[in-house]
Length: 218
Ligand code: G3P
Image (cartoon, rainbow, N blue to C red; front, side, top):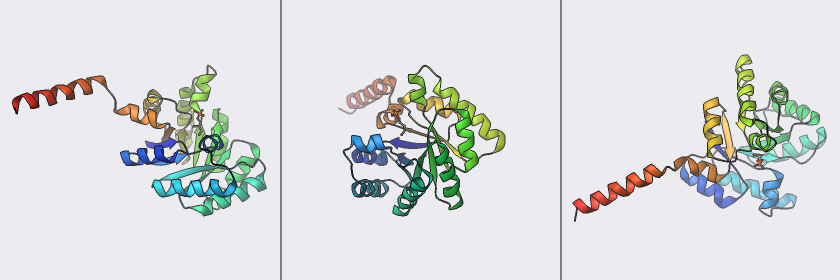
């Protein structure tokens, strides 16, 4: 299972990279705005900085919603760095653009997936990744993990190579549940990744080991 971090915050990306378990980064326009990154030049520069920190794929989202605009933006993003994955919204024009990018071997991440039908058509178009938003489905009383499970079944039935990128992961249990189901990738906040390390019995056990060592070595 690949671990991506879902942020545009450079210090958090660095911290996850230093942990040694980071496989990539996902961003979106909201996350870029949260870091105060505005204007085309600054946005492109920020993506380059992220690519310099991590070794894996970095999703950079287009803001156009028409085919020509998505292609123009996507090609510019893809030229920026070989690690860039063009993040395209799940809309009709986006599907056409994903098919185009696929023919040009430009990697894509189809975002804002909320149904199995959307996942299926994005895979048919040749998306490298599809991003079902599990947290946002949970927010509206719909089982986000069930969507991941259904997509896994469908992709396995036909051997689609499109990777299932569980997005809108909010906490550590989402990661564990996605791993049980067989999502290829998860993207979540740094806190959700760091949560995997924690267990109170580990802390209690380590404290006792260190105390016993200290007593017997005085
Ligand atoms: O990057 C897309 C997705 O992961 C957003 O997550 O928490 O805003 O629903 P969230």
